[in-house]
Length: 434
Image (cartoon, rainbow, N blue to C red; front, side):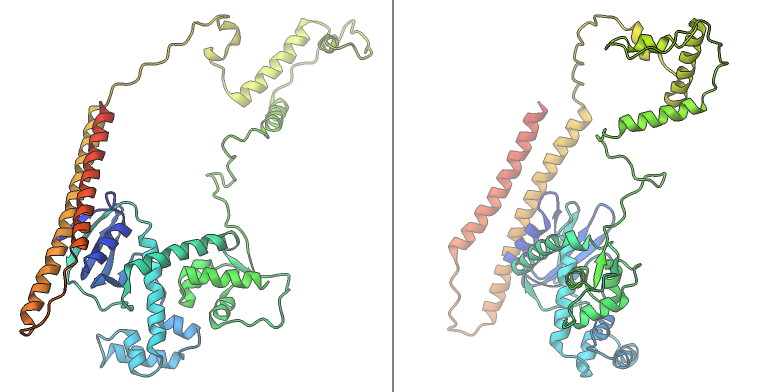
């Protein structure tokens, strides 16, 4: 059994390796979170993908599009549960003459691409290949790995182009209140089915599931209806803090002066006011003084030191209520005028446990590279053995295929390059630790 780690070789690289070896079997994937997925290959081509998450229903998809009636679906399901047990729903619908095989193939191919798009986002996890393991569930036409990877990349580009308007799978479409649309607009069955289910509460992902569409297809339909003026989509609500209000963005200081003034005013309103002191000999209001004399003019309103002390006490109580009790470090008058230069703290000693983990990680990567090389060799050996078996069955006089020695040499060089790269990475990590 071939196996490896996605940290050493990403899933596209593993699939390309299996495609080059014309592998047939099931690629089992496991994520650190406990999720599992399967990719089935036949002669290096993918024909089925089973990934975690909710998937579209074939019957609901066909009924929503108007391709299949509810009665026909009920008849096929009844046959599947009675005399034709073990048949897939798509096989039954084609066998009973309700739909064409091309419609079933198009649906399963879209589901395969949707599931593979999600799996290609996995950056961590393990994989293992069980040769000759097969499935009959959700079978699509066998497709070359290179074509599927190109399709997934094109889907990502398309989604990035429409995401500014659709706002993602969790956005909630609503019927447009403007009511402005082209009177000659033609709506296809998918758009009509989705439009009839828009209620201002269902998300794009929920609408996709109920219409039997993938999220990618539903996003395209919503984008088209937005352009036609039939739908509106607001941005999803921002993530709220524990108090239910938007958190202030980190680093934003524009509102600090206003916020501080509001808090100080509220604290002053709550602070107890001292007893008023009758003014004795208060100087009359004077005209505006030159710059620098304004503080003196304001102090003249108080008759004596007791009034000034009461005002200071009131402000202090307000600040204490707002900022909490002061500490010794907050006293600016106790700070020395000339502080000695700060000596930068010495770098902490290297953690031996961290170094050991790095060393083990480098060894693991080297082991993964060796496993990949062994996997390539096993695949090549299996291919040669299969070719030998076929040659034994051929009649005398049969001309054997010419072996491409350059291709064999190229594969060997690629395996050696992967091994050397892993050794180089391990050496770099060892030097970095020193």
